[in-house]
Image 1 (spheres, rainbow over the protein chains, first blue to last red):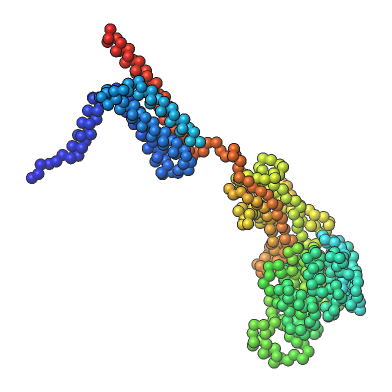
Image 2: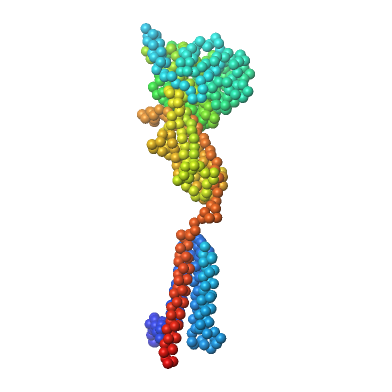
Length: 119
Length: 460
């Protein structure tokens, strides 16, 4: 008889292990960035679902709102990767402060465009 | 003794017919043979008592002219000379039609002879039988000739409900399929049209076997029929001039029962000469819901109020009184097709006023407020006899027509709503992203300064 594969427990085991490792190994600052990223993803999904299921009537408003979340997500993700101490070798010329400054500047430009297009 | 009593009754009936005037004028031209004029004296005196001014003209004479320089000289015309072929140069079928177009009302008597007026009746969808075939009936048994027939009057809205049978002698006509026709008197069921001199029973049998147009018989034939034109002028075709004659007015139907001819011809003249069932639109107005002045142009989706004032002519007092009894008035807001068609309801508390509020369509263009009211209605309410009436036996109300053109323009560039309610999820999404960004950067910098303090403490 083949040994009983414990697949359902194995998958939950894998997720559980991943979550435990993430919790223990990421610093608080990175977790904070990840929380912001998660919030932006939820907001984007919500707007997309509203557009698809209910109406896309002011399509420019949908584009503005959705691209606001997506653009902010991209900027925050790049901030996270530039600030992560494990990536110090990749980003020798970019200090964390410079990364944050780029992030803020990019975000402000993004929001300017978003509110202009939002109508 | 009996004659005296019937004469007294006649006089009383004429006296009871109150002074009633037409709404379009009092001058009447009567075209009648001078030798026969006295035959209709009771009818003419009745008209004069009501206030009409009668002018008599012999059929062959040239004056007074009926229409001069495109202006009609008289408000109404009665043509009782039904046997004359030539009625003068200005009284032709074409000129009579022109008169109708200029709002003159006409009573026209027909006869068994074929005259140009016979072909005029055909233009109004009334088909006459072949010449020389008057209406004949052998019932009820009577001592008069078969061509002189007592016809019982079916109650309809033109003739008062309780009229005695009417003596008739003349030709019937077949009523065509025209909604503007108003049947007033129909032939009795047992009557038929046939040649009285020279006709034989065999010819009658042949005609009945042929079917279709072969036999003119029954109550489908009309004897007195009215027609209301689109200009609201009325013309009545009477199958024989004897209906108006004194002889028929004074002849008794049976012992002690006088004929109904006097009341009948009075009611026919009242309808034809625009005394009864005459309405008009006094004024119309339109404005936005919370305003009073009409605008030169409206915008898409505006709420517009339309008001119409309608009055009805009261012949007894010769005045126009506001009338709120129209129940199915409609307003159409039309640009090529009616975009809005809604009921125009009477406003309670304001007699004669009809008003409706509606939203202008989401289309821009040039619209018009159109009232187009063509109905057949009851003058008097006859509740118990309503089921006896066929749908055709109603008199016509005056056609009410009105049309006001108004442009509807699209909203100006700042006439649109600033924020769309459908877009609120997107507004909240963008605002929450911005707020999240500000919060994040504030907390990030706060965390940065705390870390620096800790590092500084550690370094020391």
